[in-house]
Image (cartoon, rainbow, N blue to C red; front, side):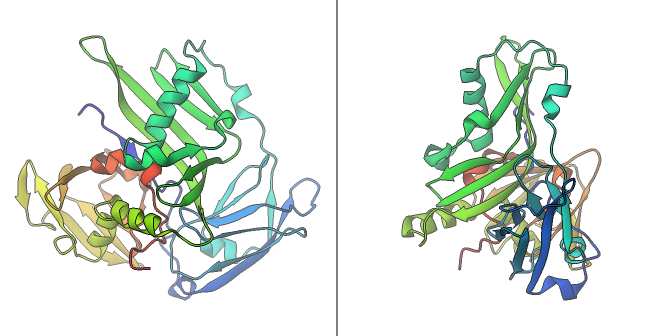
Amino acid sequence: MHNKIILLRKILCLVLLTISSSLMHSQVISGIIYDNISKTPLEGASIYLDGTTVGTVSNSYGEYQLNLETPLNNNVIISFIGYKTKVFSITDLNSLKAIYLDESPNQLNEVLIEADPWSWEKKIRIFRSEFLGKTTATNYCKILNEKDLRLIYTPSTKTLTAYADKPISIKNKYLGYTIDYTIVDFEIEFKTSSQGLRYTYKVYSSGMSFFSELHKSTKKKNKTHRKKVYYGSLIHFMRSLYNKGLTENGFSIYYKSFPVHPYKYFKMHPENGLLKVTMEVELLSVLYNQFQQSSLEFTSENDTFYIDKNGNHTPPNGLVFGGDFAKKRISNMLPLNYHPNN
């Protein structure tokens, strides 16, 4: 399949399968963040639940309190400009009162890089398109700190790679969010057609995201757009699969172009508060409201993934998404704690 895309929206949201039910209720996690060398407290460090609007910053004493009001399985991210980002499960972080961050070296300078023949203008144009997506929402999105990006095209592998030492800030006027996105990996692989035309073959994107409301009071149009983006989205599909409500929520499943019972090729059973799902065929097509078409394909490494009640699936690299699911990138991303009825 040309344009096969690995879309990893919720990267590093690795679920700890042994989380006890007592930790899944409302709780406050607190601690102090220090520089690992000087042992001085770090003011302004970001502490947030990956992929959500739940977060806080450390005060002048390095202290923080993170209020987890909803039962999410996401990891907690602790980041500070100039320091290595740390990722914790809720269970592990709850047992730590002191967090020590290490300064982050400029790793890119340690890598030998081929001569890059592409201009910055060409690379940033391609990056915007593949990172933000190609939907209506994309027209209302802007990357606020593009100059913090380092974009490198490698001719021998026909890949465009993106790096950044600090989170990339995206202003999304369509959905009413500001997203701080920490790039872990971002790579676009190109191929050349028989006619000699270059096309995007694969996009691999992994990172961590924190959502903030763009306005003090969410505008009515933003609420309308959020619902429009949500219905038929990947998170809507995963929540429907978790609740065994695919048909009720407008999703149909197809195998080799023929409609099948929605759960015929999904082997599912609960495991430690999650839903364990095994796909019994390599590729399935998904149709939403008989209009939006997507596909699910498991990778060669895995045919099993897990879903929590909020639609967060793991491992994020266990599935390859195509069609409508793949087209909706950062510009159509909603927080994992978003619910259309709230």
